[in-house]
Image 1: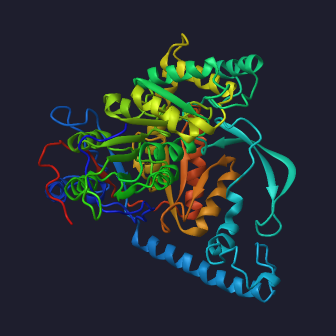
Image 2: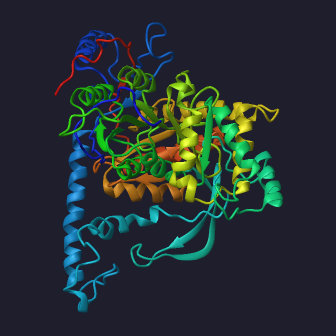
Image 3: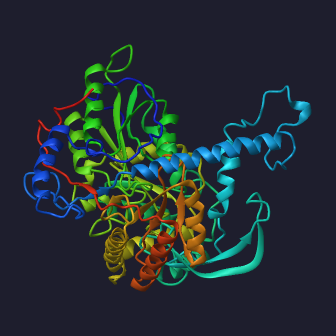
Length: 573
């Protein structure tokens, strides 16, 4: 990947998170004209249907890009809930300033790092206003995060009990253990994060042969035969020419994007891309333009402008245009509209960088990710990235593509040149779990887990909707965001769930838009029907206690549509 044959222009810009208060059809890739037409037809059909019934649009099987139904449901934030959420943040902010005033006059004890009196005329090391949210909001609910796990994070886990006597500034361990907490937070999609079974036994055996650490880089004397075996297996698993592995998933993005693009190149990035992708794009020195989440109209508009206008000031053609998207977006639970992205990429002769961190193993009938999910040709993806930290129960990441690309990265990627080689037991965990998924271990364990994950995901999402919760994302995504909205309910939900022996992840601002705080459930193939029912019962109970069942059952479900050359002609400036 050295030069684009016909990639050309756009204005400069910088990727940054974009707050979103509910999704409208136009923001999820629909053309306004198509939406208006469909809305008029839908109004006629709604006269004979219950308004509370959810409608799923199936993808056409002939003459379109999609070969299967593709539904993503979002529900607008209720107006009253939005107003109360803003009021809640406003009240917290007022009391935060009041407490800062009391701390300034030493009426209230200050636990935060502060400048010394003798250094008051120096350039400040700490920006008090930047830490305002941490001091006065995050610290009040800090006990909902960083809980120490003292067991395998499988379907169940054990937690070390801790208490705080100073409003979560410090914690003390009681010495007791909370046993058998149902784990709804780990990315253990296929259940390979385990200490028994084929993978664990193989990793233990390799530890006896190679040890745990390599203590060198791949380019020096840290290149083991199992490293080579793993990379060949990854390439065969993905259907790509070659692949290479890295010891850290975050660094796979942040260190390799700068090796692929630079000054004079253009990166088109989804507004909800992971921080590692954003950091890699910024470190590259390329011009960055952000398109609306999963919105193909917005993406094509940027592509057209790039081709027409060229680089800022000089108007020379761009050296490269790189489209950067994810398979599953980990905060939204949405799946990329990959068939449409590939169609646009081919039309405008750009490159495609696909991050399959959450989708690999979790999507597709064979567990091969979003490419397998849409039954596409892997060769249509120029740079296929993924991690081993989720579905494979290991650590690290990989990049796959053409052999020329991989050979180039081996020499130019900072992650390849300077990073220590992957630990041999981790490599063996990847090899064994991947062979299980491929069925090369002589069993059907991998296929059974892929199928079980799909069934658990569909069941869990359906039950939450029936209970009246607002959930986001694609119907087939094992990442299930459930909306909490109000800041006080973030900590309350996490604590109440733990009291019922359920471990969940709660997320708030600045990781999400300020009024879209949520709980994020990650479903696993290791979850049995009984575990899911117990968790759902506790979620329903806490939902009634905290009044979280906001849904009015007016869920907008956006499906795909046929693709032709005139599809994106109606573009608003």
